[in-house]
Image (cartoon, rainbow, N blue to C red; front, side):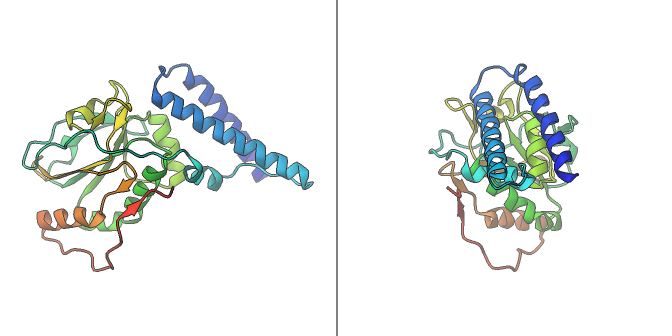
Length: 251
C-alpha cells in the first residue's frame, strides 16, 4: 500500500515537472534540473530492474532522493567577486519562499539576520551546508537570529529540496529577474548563472556586520565565525560544544 502511494506521488511529481519544464527559459539552472530529473529516472529504473531481477518489487524512496547529491557532479571554483563592506547598509529585497509567500529583509528589523547565498539546490556542498545550519538551528535561535537561504532556484525546487532534506528555515527564490538580489550583494557569478557561496550577517538596524565569500565553491564556511559575530551583536555566549573542523564538499 505504501509503495503504491509512493509510486502515485512520483507520477504526480513527474507530471508536474513536465508542466514546469516548458515554462523555464533555457539556462544552466534548467540544464541542472534536467540532469537531476534524469538522475532520478535512472535511479528509479535501476531500482525497479533490481527488484524484478530478485523477484521482488522496489521503488525510489525519499532517502534515495535526499542522498542523490552524493552522486551529483562536483561543483567547485574560486570566487569571482568581493562581498559588500562591513558597516554598509544591507540592500533591501523582497523574494518569494517555497510557499510563494513574499519575504522582505525589513520583516526582520529588530533581529539579526543571517543571509546564506548558495549556488544551487541539490548540489553536493549546498546540501551539506544547509543541513549543517538546520542541525544548528537551536543555536541560531538562541542568538535570536533568523536564517534566510537564497539561491537562483525556483520556488518549486526550493520546496522539493527542503522537503527531502528536512530544511525548515526559509529558502528564497532569486529566480526572476535572475540573481537580482545576489547582484545587489555583489556575489553573483555571471559566467555560471548562480551566486557565490557567501554569508552576510545583518544587525537589527539593517547594517552588515559580517561578510564572507568562500575561497572555493566546495568550501563550507566556518560556522563559528557566524557564532562569533552573533555573540558580539547580542551579548549571548558562544556555544560550548567542541569546535568542528571547517567542512569541504562530500565529493
